[in-house]
Length: 226
Image (cartoon, rainbow, N blue to C red; front, side, top):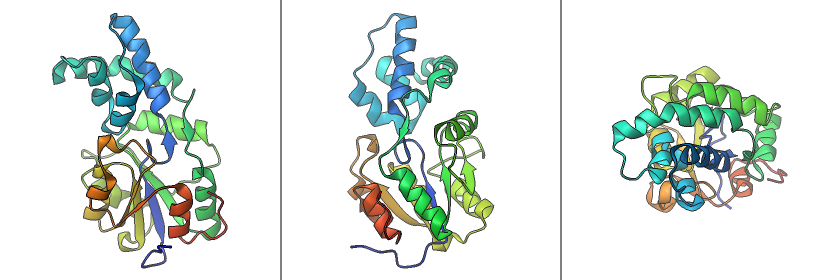
């Protein structure tokens, strides 16, 4: 069983595809927008795959001929639809609540670094799992840059009061690994997320894990039934 080369002071997570399975609600919003515009909706699988890339990537599944400007023009309506229903089918991945409770019990701070807009992040987290106790939440518009830039990860560490060299960054996208590594954190890629159609073994993460239970073991959370 793999273990960390240090005792972690903090663990930071991507949100969509790492902590939360939010693709069903993101897809549901796309279905509504397709109905409004009178176009045939795409199947679920390719939409789920690109969720981590954001609204324009999701919209491009339904409007493949649209250029970037046309996709961008559709984003406000898409986010309006999504905001109204974003906690309908979204759930934490199996084992994640127990893992986070294990971190709290061990006194290991944890936080979220996501490219999701702040108004959505700030509304979704407390509605979905109100007992979560985050030390820092950095959204896609907290800074002028977002992942794969390391600045959001470094800001999360600073707000949580922890040394990046003693922290772990966990994500389901290559950009998570790039941002975490550039910030000096130990990086963990997870196979249970959306993966953007990629192979996490090729991203250069320090380790790839298959399940929250494996991640809990890596973090030394003995007895966590994740």
